[in-house]
Image (cartoon, rainbow, N blue to C red; front, side):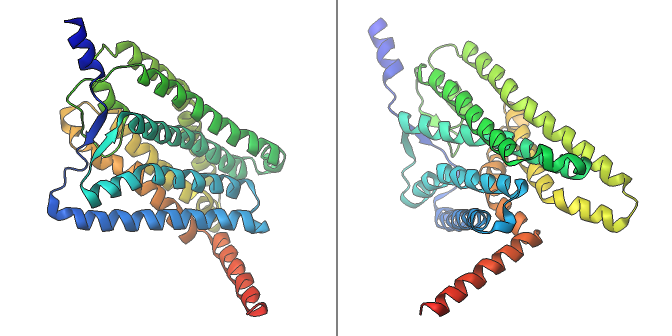
Length: 319
């Protein structure tokens, strides 16, 4: 009896994704759609990284954070979409347990780091709008690097801990993941043992590492909106709001869908919609970031023109 139970616990070596539940005739269309999204996302984010690094005019805290966000979104998309595209193209929706845990590790790291990064960006905009006299002295290069280092280190620590604990659990059948990515909820449901202690540890870590940056982001924008409202000049209000409106849209899209998915994930009404909402923060947010920041940002437009002009002159000089 014990031997049979042990074999049942260790028998699963791979999982099967249900994906978006799409019928076979839609797979070519979905493959092309997500392929275009992936190419545009990676190209747009890499373009921002190149501009921030190459153009001296963009060497400021705001664009330093934007460059890091683009780097993070590139990693985000590369963690999720290639496997999804492979499944749509070949029809093979299987993934080994080790690859699944690896995907979840990078996916979880990206979410955790982005919460800290968005908090740092909101604090940067708060200082620029609400405390402009102290901005240069507080948001210096050393402090920016410390914020980013803290975001990456905290994200890696919390997800290394979660994946380590998750790897200690055994998985029982059925080995079906009702999702298009390896997320924590479907993995918890397949554990052979009682995951109550694991859930409590994850809840505690999530509270410690996500609530403070969320509250900082929320409070920063309350203060920013309050400061903008008190500006007498209409032009002044529009100028102040334009400096943070792009970031505010990204924050609302990311946090809004993330909260819906993870706070209401077990309710019957939201169960079938969670995968749709997950698409927003896993696929559409990385796509929206370069579009929002490039289409609405005049400095990025100027930087792109300068880089293109330099490339044009270089090509003329060395035909």
